[in-house]
Length: 23
Image 1 (cartoon, rainbow, N blue to C red):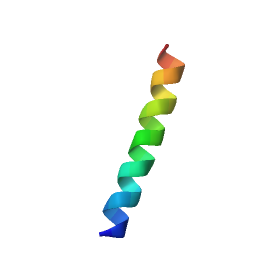
Image 2: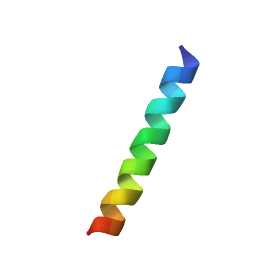
Image 3: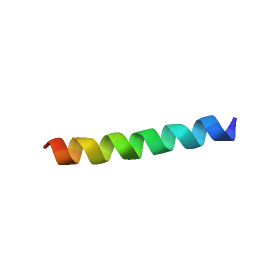
Image 4: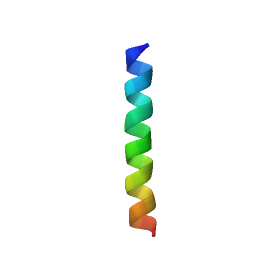
């Protein structure tokens, strides 16, 4: 499903942002 793939991309982006802020 495209929606599932899009969600995965968003999750990775959010996690990356959180990791950057945490660091």
